[in-house]
Image (cartoon, rainbow, N blue to C red):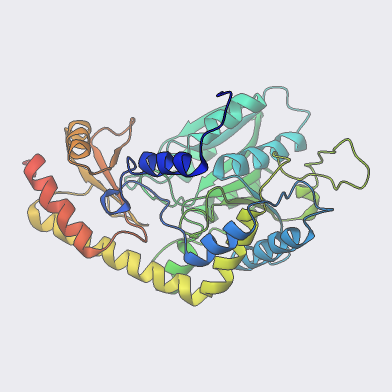
Length: 384
């Protein structure tokens, strides 16, 4: 650290220069996050000094969190479900599995069962909690197979996890069938909807054939959602919801001080900016606003698919959500070549032939045209 500080203007100018190294959104086709809604930015900025870890002081931000949770609970089919705003999907999945683990202290070597495309955060979660993660086979559209899940369950299984929008493919597991299996085996059932939570309700309203994933499905115990993805809130803003207050109260983390409320999340010091921002964008857009955004995203995705197929490219599978995967045998090399040209896309380490493209708020038809034209110069459609 310097002995004497620098002029504030000089430091801020340096930071502005560093930000110029960031890739502009108009060249980003791999991110489920995007530019936050203006209401989220303004509300979040106004609450940057707040701390949801100290509710004696920041009572208004606590109220904003409760309002945001109630609105999302209503979206999930249970306005009275118990939830917490957290840092993101990783913390939400950790808290859900923490509850599942606490419910079965009699099992010395606990296991959970999930599909092969379960989010990689579950690997971290299981390592932290001393749980074995057993992944099972997928169908042709990269969704967890219920028969494979049933076969994997044994006396050590404490939970089953369904994914409502996988990170790699946007695939939605058959949540209803999996929930029924969990009920038959008296298992905790968690739904990771960090990707699909702010897409599926609105896409279903538009007539898209997607399974229900929320608390209207019997057997669903908890749900992870990420307002900072398709919810258009600021980062970090995740959420975890439990069907009952009793499940949520399995998380009881006390502080040292009198009159300080019990914590129900992993992180103690939590910025109230996320609560303010999330409530602001939920209230500003409403169900109809999110539905129109979803309509637009699906329209742009359809345009992307049309442009790719017209040029001779083939998809790995028909997309369910706003994630498109192009079947290219040299996808990793194509990804690197695109990045050299300023385009950011992604390729799964496990599915190295899948060139993954994500459509979200900052992607439009003009951006699609520019991308496809660039892709043609780098990788001609293979002879399938």
